[in-house]
Length: 313
Image (cartoon, rainbow, N blue to C red; front, side, top):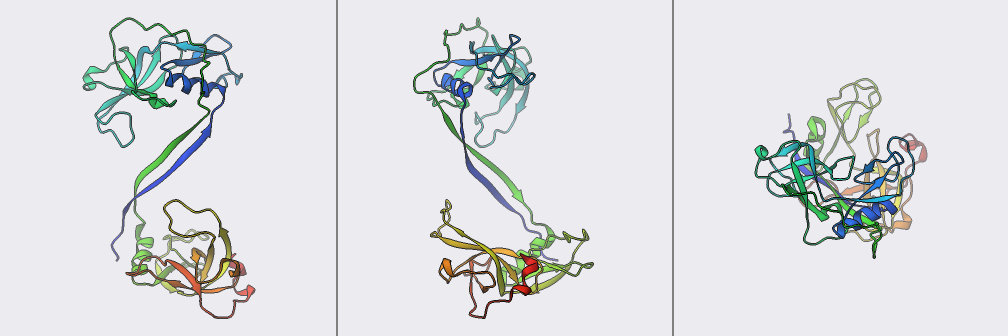
């Protein structure tokens, strides 16, 4: 039985969004060391502010400043801060009800240890040295035993309002492909493509998943397929991907490998992009040392008849 593989993977992308008038004022206020909430119709003050009342769905727009001091309503200790978190030393996640607010704001509390944190403790905002109009303009909260701070009297109108934000989204995780896909990846290292046959419907699936997606039964019989195949469908890519050294335009296609009952995808090379077509017969081009095919190129064979691959579209 082949060794089961695992590898660290990262999914990362910039999330870009525009801001409405309420969120724009809130983030611009943080840049100016002002914390803003929004009034509801029944007199509550919501911080962070939202554009619609979560209870009545009423549109909200009346901004009100609250103090940068407040009270911890609940907390949890973070023993091992992760990449991108507010502090790089152990800290507490806290919900803080700022003075003048009726809801709590989630942020980090810089404290020497969990024994120094308790519900009801008084804290204040520690502002970041450089601020740009983001929640990170609040560097963290810190313990505070002084009097409550007075609001500055801001009405929520500022010069050079923040109208949009770009927030990096990132997920770090360890992926294990399991028995079926581990066998598939080991075979690719030898420049072979293997799938698994369903014992019920007898279809061969590539890449294998360890179970038939149609019958729902386990699969274990390995079947070598390809390496040649047929282009079933394709698209022309005109937008260059970050960190991908391929000039646009290029073609990405679904390819039905000979002997497989499921098309896999791959890049088509060795032919002008506008000459790629359904039915084109292709073969893999392997990188030095094996691994996943770099791309597929035409074999020179006549195009496959539509009837031979129409069920795999």
